[in-house]
Amino acid sequence: MLIIDNLHAEIDGKKILNGLSLTVNAGEVHAIMGPNGAGKSTLAYVLGGRPGYEVTEGSVMFAGQDLLAMEPHERAAVGLFLGFQYPVEIPGVSNVQFLREALNAQRIQRGEEPLTGGEFLKLAKEKAALLRMDMEMLKRQVNVGFSGGEKKRAEMVQMGILNPSLAILDETDSGLDIDALRVVGEGINAIMRAPDKAVVLITHYQRLLDYVKPDRVHILAKGRIVKSGGPELALELEREGYDEVMA
Amino acid sequence: MTLIARPTNREEDWRYADAAFLSTAPIDTFDDWRTVTVAPGDVLRETVQADDAAPSAVARCRVHVGAGGRYEYFATIVSGPYRRIELEVTLEEGAHFEFGGVTLGGDNKVQEFVTRVIHAQPGATSNQVVRAVQWGKSTGNFLGRIEVVRDAQKTDAAQNFRAILLEKGASANTKPELEIFADDVKCAHGAAIGALDQTAAFYMAARGLSPEKARALLVRAFIADAFAAIDDETQRETMLEDALAHLDEGAL
Image 1 (cartoon, chains in turn green, purple):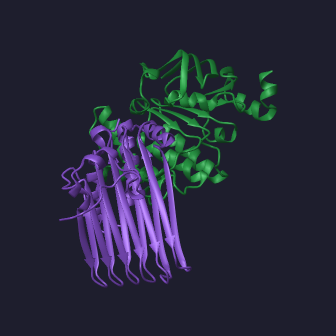
Image 2: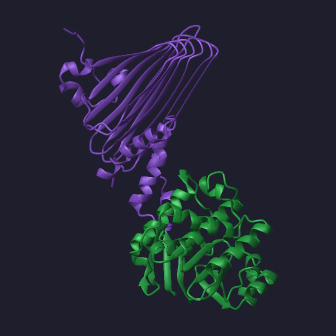
């Protein structure tokens, strides 16, 4: 589903990714762990197409298409979802308005019929319930006045509504208390655990992986994958730390 | 026969006006005054929608609001090359003036609101919100002067100006002026000029919105502040949609 080959990327001339390769198949959950500054968020932004992140070498194929040749909104329409480490506040725009516009823009680009207001609200209600989020929250402005945990839950409601085939979740577990962590973990499973979908979880900690069991765990350091393994690698990391495991 | 002097950029009230226009427009253009009187206790709302068919490039209006009266004025300026709406509002005791203005334009357009609000008696209030959205080499201005006369205690006056410049080369100017001769007075003013929030734009793109759609949503939310005080939802939406329709013309 996702094939990253020898990816090099830089920001303002500073090299961050140095030959990163990673293949994610449909039906899999991959965890990417690594010390601060390893390039984890950069990887997420490069995949999402954030302006300022320049790819200097390598390729990314997603569902058989050249991902890097697409505009950010086109990447979303072909099924990529980027869960933000710091979800952005958009004053004056309600979640409902934002998500309906976003979903219908995606649908139109895919040649599907846009949803009516009623159809959209029904879908939104269903996905909000999955994350135990009150519909009233969705009528409020996007992320404005939301706590850190609420923002992360709102991200997962967005993911549920947009229904991507690949989710890149950048530290979705940060800022969550124990109860919210479980709700978010179960939400990810309910929305993304399917034979035709895949997830890349970027995280510092094992704790989210207790709920969302990874098939593969990778350690990212200095801009490339330095070690890969099964779920046991995350446990080993938690126990021993990066220095020990990478040595 | 009217005898008025042709304004120049040297005058404070005209300092950001289009110089070419000032020197070439027929002299009568600058003397297009309208008079509005709001009787004590009455409420009057006036709206000027996107004004391509504007009768005059310079529209000036003198408003007198009687005690306890309320005057509301909401306007969108989209035309050019020069377009100015000027209001001089005198408030009697306990009267209120509510103003929401939007300038929205590209090319070399110079678009401005100029207000002079005179709190002539105690207890009057005023609230002014202006939003400017400019691209190309256009300019959006808000010159707001608030005068609080001696003994006009308990005056509460607020003005707020914000501008979004969609492209390098566009500009915005604001010049709040407060002249206060009473001591028990609240006057607040704020101003900010910036570019479109690129972080929000990327966030919206990552959810599937094209740059044009994202920009329209952000601009809509931005200018909505100017019309927030319109309590009639249909009228408020009409003002917003009408203004936004002009964003599609040339912005990027």
